[in-house]
Image 1 (cartoon, rainbow, N blue to C red):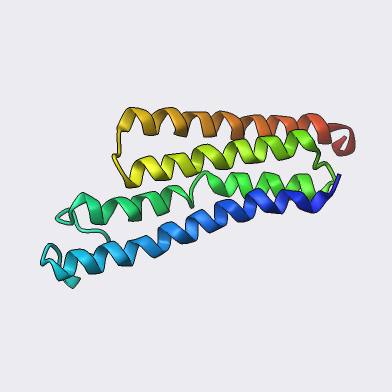
Image 2: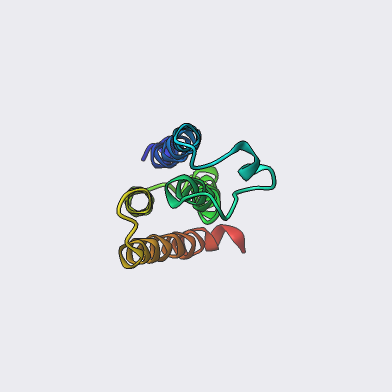
Length: 142
């Protein structure tokens, strides 16, 4: 198995993160042009007066920098120990897919229940990846 294949789902999640990052100034500038926000609204972070269409991309971006850190770490651990196999790749893509769906939901119709379901699913996959890592790596660790 090509150990470098794990970098593809990692790259996909990084790409998603950058796309959401790009959306933040787009939404802020558009809202500023419509007079919905002022520069001062962001002097001390995201202002409570910023409309949802402006604040949600920023919140989604923060989501993509929280638990996904554990995804990047476990992927690198699999790769560093030459433990990347088909199961690991499937799990990695099964993590990235609901994260992308979560962002799509969050940035569009923003149904909380829909977001919760895909967020929970991604977390189950991430937890499974960590368990699988230690199951596979255990003989090398003791």
